[in-house]
Image 1 (tube, rainbow, N blue to C red):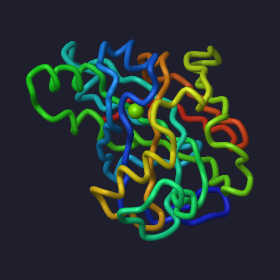
Image 2: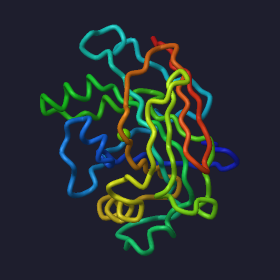
Image 3: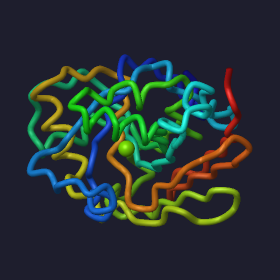
Image 4: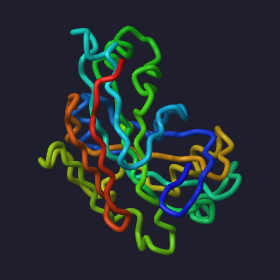
Length: 223
Ligand code: MG
């Protein structure tokens, strides 16, 4: 996959859940003591400018017809990473990008409430827009002081700063590396702030992070 002038070949996408206090509150979820993570599959990835497909399966049923945007800072792993220490974490990071953790919200909540895994609500095709490039670590002075913003049809819906992340990048990577071997190209998304809201076919999403850029995606109705 090409992100700007870089080609990456990820084997997995790992996402943090509830990593901003205000988002945990809006989801009426507890604030975690350790990082909470889940995996997205590679079929979700779609690069800047390509559409997000709202599946008809979700759109046509009252039970599942809510799909939300979540703007997140993501980092790309640069080398094999297992059981690392926090002080060496940055050596394992190639750079930073923008990730949208698109979520079939009603399906997620319904599955969670019935004690089913909510895996499927996160993994529809195109539910992981990414880009527009990888900003190398040398260009990002402090990954914990970046404004992030999401506009839906020109209107600001999410606006925050990565300084509000509960678990910071070194802590996240150290924690993950205890469970999973990360390899070059793997994508780690660091969670979303508050302001998540439903998207509809025809909507235009613009997501921006300081020093990285903007990705723009139209939502279309799928088959
Ligand atoms: Mg998320």
